[in-house]
Image (tube, rainbow, N blue to C red; front, side, top):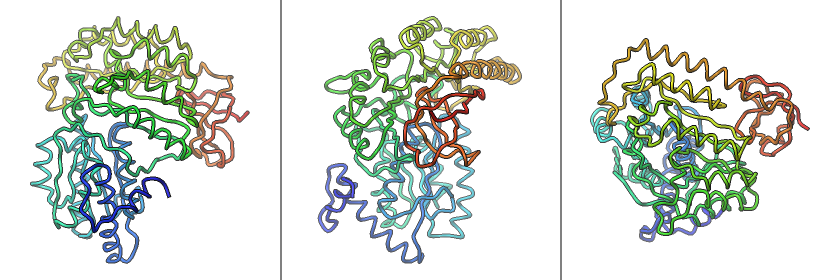
Length: 482
């Protein structure tokens, strides 16, 4: 029995509900177990739950918390939307993400009619938009639970409220300074885990809805983060991913400020932790101190995701990114001088309002000079509620598509060349799983995030082993255990 189980078992639900978090949620988890048993008895079987996740690593981590809470209540996890309880953890970065969720709800309405005891929940960034919540309340009354990004930790309480109310429960917080952790979490891998170090964003890029739905930046206390990392290490976790919308801003909201570089160093000092990753970094905030810490510490993975978005200083100004093409290139040069083996990846938007062919060629120039290992490329999608949604654009869809195709072609060429630079080397690999394409192979990941496939025994999963990188396939390696 782990520490959280012990705390939950100590709770007496015949006593008044504690006001302090997370003990309040332990109370509701224990109370929810009783409701679950009644529902399972009525169904004549154990009940299943499914969390359908859209969006970023922050949402993935939130879904692990939701799954952990539901399994603690009694549910068995499933990947299928045929489960007895389905929660959609939504993303709203692009408007088509909203349309996708509404499409799933149309299917769920039919399921709900044929299986009235089925429970459906909606949470995540999309639920932080008042017009979305109004639509759910008006057109989708069959949805049982609606909550947002700020109170994911309240799932057990919301679940109990839904059972007791007998109808739709909506619990949306506009914003919060509250950070509640130390709740059950169901990790995808037992040997690696994400750890939230901060929430929200203060950058207000003109194309991005995140600050409006995730709220302003708020950092967790460093001692709480280190305590969580130590607990994960004791559970067998070897690799930690530090998560935040902009990890480089960590610590600015604390009463006793701490830099991200200082926190990163402390995390690497936890016994048992062999690898530390982080995302995402905003170029304007990546400090010399952070570069020094990464360069000096081999536990920190040789991979930085550094979203560029555009190579045009004019467009970057329109995006409110607060750096220029020149300063971005200077930062890349500085990183590579001190960490020559670093793998750099990025995000690029094509077709931002007002982008000309000359602006696009500036982006292509940066791509050719930096030579990213991988670039995640997107055609600009107007997002209602952001300043950029009101900007005028004179480029045609055909022009934008042509630029996008040219960018993808060049990025792919460079990526294939850059990733192959490790051919013939022997490098440590964290073995993650049996290969999905070939059951005789294992799949692992290098420190720089590149995948490697090789023959081995499944009992090695979770271990870090040396592998020779014998054959480069452009975006991954075929190798052999050394």
